[in-house]
Length: 370
Ligand code: AMP
Image (cartoon, rainbow, N blue to C red):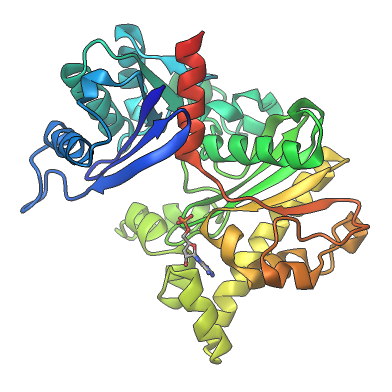
């Protein structure tokens, strides 16, 4: 089966072609709609198709067996990957107020592809879907309930495809079915979130109504006193820009690249050292909360750019958590092994590379094959 996975952003289009779930080609078209770039998503798809055809990977998009789309927001309606038809397109459109930057771009990808390859089944895989199993006490905010009932203001959570993928991989490592596993999955990339997984299902996650909540990220503040944006707005400050683009690691030390921050901290830079400490402190805050919530934990999982590669962050996160059952083997951590917990550690500590595109391909095949 040949599945094309598309991740359409507002100005970029990432694509990856899978043949029987093996990745055979991937690429990205950037600067869509910008001066010097291609005109729109349709033109970007044409460029992607041309590259894949010229590379000998495909005769045309019309010959694909399926197309899987990453869709950021599925609201409460979408709890699983869904075959796209007109009703689904309308529903994704209705969810635009909840994801004004992302859902329109995802829709453009879907609609352009429907024109280019009309007979090929398309599947939407939602970033929010995995978290729809959270209990109400985990997703309801303590604000007047009409804001939820009328406007849909609640915790949704994101990165669901990644949390789900690494949870499944962790279950394989534990040699148990996923629905017998309690896990804390830690997606630490430029965007970052933690997820508490109870018997294979998400029961809590650190992102909220938007991906701004929770951990300290590359440029996003994560959790702050909710009065702070109000304070800013009263002074005419663009709180949206400050909290989404100028905060997080960047706001703390001027850089959002954790690798460089580690280098500068090692060289004695005080702000970089503090940024690292604040970053790790917040991760530990959620990790502790989720371990308490789950009671019994089989394993914790590090994934995404920082989780997969930063020996230092993994070490700082696990430091002193032996009373909670986390015994890190520092040598294994240093070597970047797949299991970095000590032999006798009651809780496994795993490093699992995430692969959202592969998971979208897997889910797409499953939906088409039904
Ligand atoms: P992602 O969004 O998953 O691509 O993750 C990006 C983040 O991972 C950036 O902050 C990178 O600096 C960080 N990262 C990648 N490789 C390393 C590394 N070897 N050590 C520390 N951080 C890394």
